[in-house]
Image (cartoon, rainbow, N blue to C red; front, side, top):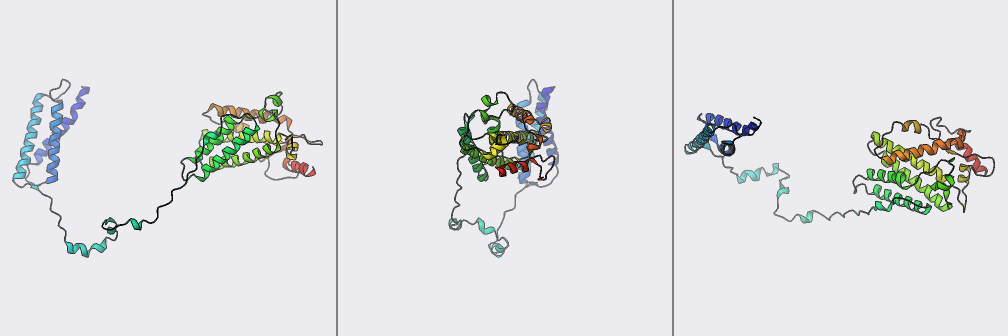
Length: 360
């Protein structure tokens, strides 16, 4: 029967008690601890037999219950007989010799730490000053932005929060994860990604091209973009890399590059930056725009894994921005072509851009 398994503890206890009863027949002194253990076993057998014997789903018959009771009584009689005849030995008393303790006290040099007959509070010294934990309001980063002033403000807040998390990593748990998640949320969900340079409605629908910008706001945002990407790289390279996280950090850096590229192309209305003019290809003279060489970003993105839909959407926008903008930018004007060469040659894009800036 499946219910017979419930009777196994009672049967095992019964067999164990019978084995103990057979061993008690030998005239060997019984220690007091063993006698106490036998009494506990007898109590357990009595409890289990009383619960299971006679039940409809039990395999224990009343005759077996009487045999269990007989075993219990036999063990009780044997234990009482052992106590009356001195068969149960007592633990020897522990006698301490004061002279011996005083002589051998030097063998335990750390025993004095257990003494409590003197005031030890004065030996503790001054209490340690508790560290000051500065609050980190991650909610300062909003869910969306509407203009350049809000973008500059959210970038400043993000840099300040990342600095607090980095300086208080010994007080706050999982700061690297928090820093990575903050930058990821900022560039994949808060800041809008730019439209390609050749998009027909870029001047009307692109956040980074539709509104005029001041030089102070542009310089401030570019500076904080640099700080944010440095924070993000330091935190991302401090975490264990998985396939999904590898995709997240690649796409996040792609979003940062796309935003920085679009922001650098924007020419301020109050004080146009020469770098922005030459980078966007609107400076005086026969100039062409410059851009960023993405290398193997597109082929590598085919094997990325994402667990959030916003990451896949951000990847699509980044790829669309750089791939669709490629026909507008000459190949010899692509910066950071490190997959082709690591040397700073005379005819490279960086050299050409520096020559144009120095000429102006």
